[in-house]
Image (cartoon, rainbow, N blue to C red; front, side):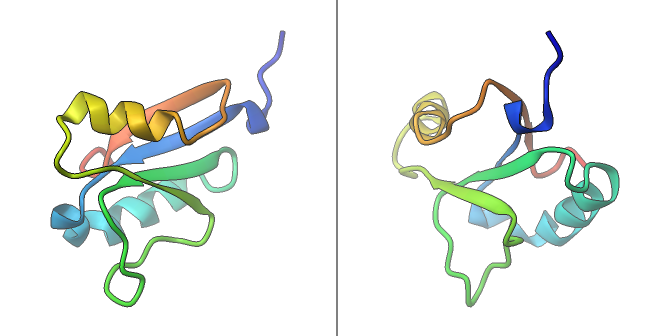
Length: 92
């Protein structure tokens, strides 16, 4: 069975403490992935006046007080995807 673009979600896990690398991450993702996959960011918060996340990213929020695994699990419960490509903001 062939996997279609709509079956794959590119997920980036991040935290606003690391938002200084977001411009590089998002530009490299756009350069090498473009619109081939749907995109999502797992993040602790998002004040759009302070932080820029491209409009084509679904935003899933996690509770910063949870351990890492619980943060990821809570975000995975917010998405619908057959497959995901998962990485962090410093993996560009």
